[in-house]
Amino acid sequence: MKIAILGTGMVGHALGTKLVAIGHQVLMGSRTASSEAGQEWLRSVQGQARIGTFADAAAFGEIVLDCTNGANSLAALRLAGAAHLNGKILIQISNPLDFPKGCRPR
Image 1 (cartoon, rainbow, N blue to C red):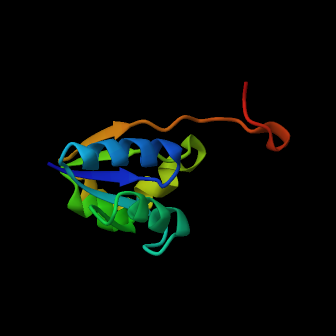
Image 2: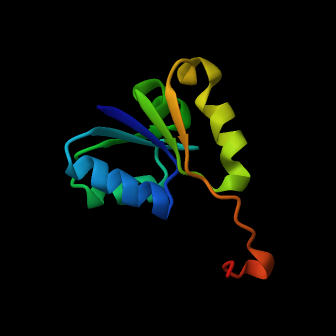
């Protein structure tokens, strides 16, 4: 199955890695196709997937996993494009975390 992952953070990395391992085609998207986090993940799966923009990923996937930071989900979905998301399953995994004063939430 073709699965799009929006977001290059730890959740996207974990899900993408497992999905690749069990044989799915995965395209991880971010704001830019050359993001360092995306490149790092691609190396970690030995090039067995693809990376691109949010729009590239949304156009590619039969299922789209939104793994962005909750505060950025709407912007990422706008960049993915309504036309690319139309008729697809969208699974919202993002979490609107609050990082007060740079600390991780407890």
